[in-house]
Image (cartoon, rainbow, N blue to C red; front, side):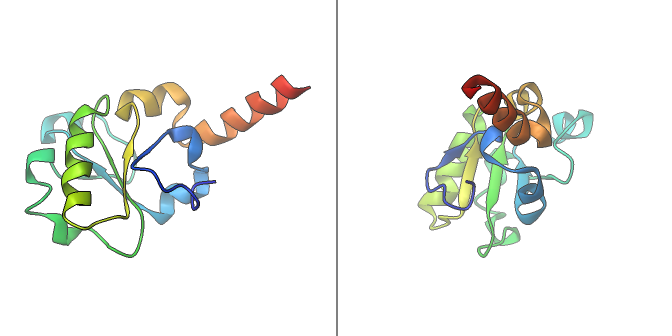
Length: 119
């Protein structure tokens, strides 16, 4: 599922729980919002600083950027992709969507719902 995804945006439901540990997750909100709550394991690089700090990000693994709803991280993701980082994905609907979808279990929940719907 996730490994084959080639678009710039991705939903939490598309990321199996075990794959979260195999990517760099970047919270592009300000430090105060990050300190208040964030996706566990995420690093904080405010969206305005993303280009000047892009050397801190790996080029050999997936980089997932997010903000509260997806709008500022979309700008950060676009900047990184324009700078040649094609390994960047933008978390659709941001932190809010991540929480609403079930966090790290969003993929398993979506699969279960699909199975139940097909029965």
